[in-house]
Figure 1 (cartoon, rainbow over the protein chains, first blue to last red):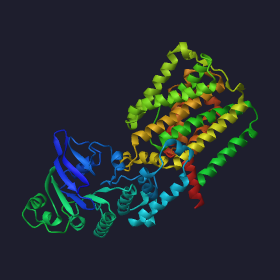
Figure 2: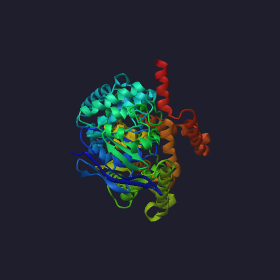
Figure 3: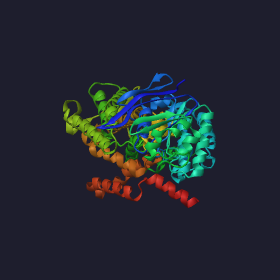
Figure 4: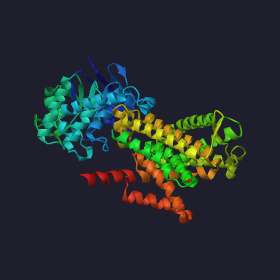
Length: 263
Length: 309
């Protein structure tokens, strides 16, 4: 069974091939990590899957439907949500409002009902605020509900982006370096949060540099190097793969399970 | 609800204000302020909330005014029908022009809307068989089912009622999920898209809404004053609207009203400076950006909050 199918996805920027015929499948209810050295094309791959870039070649299928070239909003409507490596929060809103924006797809957003406040707008907004509060508690942000985003610490902002993404009730959630910039304790908590999200039936695709986190939470791992898929397999298979070890370390020493591959 | 309280304060002010008007001149200034406020509340949804600049809204204002003038005076349409035709026509034009223009960002969007406004004012000034050219044309008084509405007192209440309605609608919009989407677009279009907001569509919608409000205000201004000239709908008028929005306070509905009122009333009292009106607006815009970039009402509100706590 496949939820997300990436087929020979390719993207050229001028002469540079950032992503080169990458193919992989993500099974529902699993965590699939995409790793690779800096500049391997991981974020470009994410941007191709989430509709921010259009692929030069190749397709993206979600739940059997070809969604290649769809806009991010159309993909969101079909149950795909994401976070960003460099935070993309709404900095002029409170934390809870950020999460409520995440539920946009489940709101009445036609112009006339919005202008005239029709259809129980007040009641549904109360329900939505409660949902947002619950989501924030789920990701450990209960103390930041009314906070201004600009006043929140970095680790909390990372979680806020996850809460916002979950508010759209996605089938599949793409996390772009959720542990970047976090200390080891915070990273462990993010790992637990990811497993909890998967436990609730959301499939997770993860780009991450923190190898400990990747090895702890992932069911399968794809390794990118210079735009190409170098290897794919279970965490144990990837750990033992000599190509992967070479790409990361340039030598034949053991990859080990711990530590961060690179900054 | 704080927003509801603010609305009733405005309603009380609009109702009580005429008690302090010693003569018709005060009514006249209040009406002009109200007309500007209607445009600015709409324009602030676009500029202040959604973060999309327009330097061409006087064009929509002018089209509303001239469609009313031409259809009533030259073709004998009933004024209400002409006003509706102007609003619909401007809505269609804004949705056609907005589609390519709103893909642009920042300076590019500013330039494109500026060009659009200039084109409209040139068309109005040169199509003299229809518009009377640079000399302008007279407009018949507004009449509804045989009753002619003219005079400052009646128009004061008409404009006051329309302004309150527009403010209430804008407040509803901002408090709704769609209003939240507008503010989200302002902060990050990429993030807004990824949570499912159809950014281009929402931007177009608020652009059209603000254009239609400007057209209705233009039509009312034409009927009230009984005369329209291209000078009243040109580039400087667009700058005036934007200055009112920025001075009053971006992303603040009452800021837009306050800005419109302040910058309509102030020049009346500074008649000595009449020749320097442009200069004054420029200086005010610069001063606002430097000393209170959030604008009058949000800055005062923040000051009040600090003082209370």
